[in-house]
Image 1: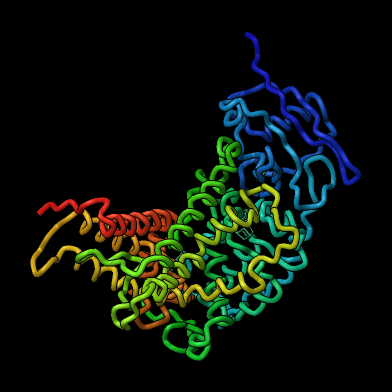
Image 2: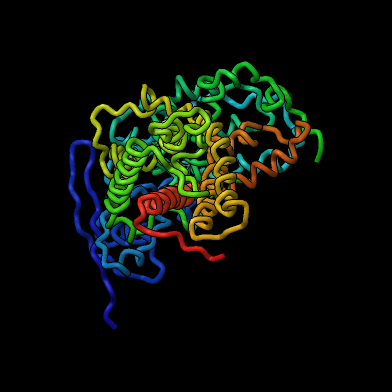
Length: 256
Length: 248
Ligand code: SF4
Ligand code: SF4
Ligand code: FES
Ligand code: FES
């Protein structure tokens, strides 16, 4: 029986330059792009650099771009492309400096993470939390730090505004901390001045690429923009900030 | 909690990678036509009422209250137009369609000196909530107009125009109440629902509005076409091109 094969184009190179090279891959059922890359490493190019760990869309290591779209290599099925006769081109994430082949240096993200004002609870753990109060932030905790959202964000990708805007992953992190029922820190001035929320024009690409399906724009960024408006654009709310409409200062669940 | 798309649905499918230019160009053409039509309607007409039907561009009828005979729509149309112009969904659409920042995900931005919403005038979009407050008042009048649409010369009368005005009020209500700023107002600004009195009902409201909010884009488009269609219907009645279909 003849074995089905397909050609996959993979970027080979480093900071000094490179090019896409074609590789012939034997197709097997249920194959994901990472399988195809492993096939190429085993048969054709043992020096092909790729970062991966779990092969289960959990570790966030295998981020790359397939036909210009940020994706997890281990979550992208080859047959989706074969079904539409679309050639597969795999390249490293464009937004981050290349190390080699498909591996990029994402350390900027870790530097940003360190700058975020940490969780500051009203009193030390353990806490009794009401599910209604934490349901919203549990969505953000699904983040696997693959940085695909950072890769697609045009503010960082096209304008290299890494000094001005921390990017969607950290907007989700900031929203998670800000919305935490036990947290007492006001990070909104940081969100505005240091994290650069104003750079985001809510065009939604981060949400579209997130492999965890986190609605970053709608559930993190826009709520942060509204909180920022409360504090910086709304004179009425500024005056009544501590009125019954907000809950600043109250951190003890009353009922269950 | 505010649902997000399921993990399976996330990430663009390969098929959608090919026709990325379609959506921004459609937005560009449709929004341009809508703005041009609105400008023509508001800036060249003194009358927006046909019998018991009032065009949404002229509602509430501030011109009548103040006795302004010329271009009365100018007095009110800035509210719905400002509401839409500062709407988070419309922002996404016009930044993609008109500014091309970006036209579609992964397509290089057109602007060389992109500033996002950090500077005026785009930073004024942060005032969206004030347009919401005004739009909430307008919605009340749209419902009044919808009821008036069924009531002609002291008796109940149902015409095609009555049904159009009713659908207009329904879709504009969905659009207004699914607004992100409204979602924030009803409960998005609360971190601890269980810590406050009335927190439970605020939480229920917030959940309901969050569910509507997921369809905000759909309501944005359908309500826009509905306003357009409602006004056009009344304008054609006023100019005698068509006659209202009366059911009873
Ligand atoms: S919505 Fe904002 S953060 Fe997300 S990709 Fe667009 S500009 Fe970047
Ligand atoms: S938010 Fe989504 S896309 Fe961004 S790093 Fe987390 S999992 Fe990846
Ligand atoms: S290998 Fe872990 S996410 Fe792909
Ligand atoms: S009307 Fe669209 S976000 Fe408010």
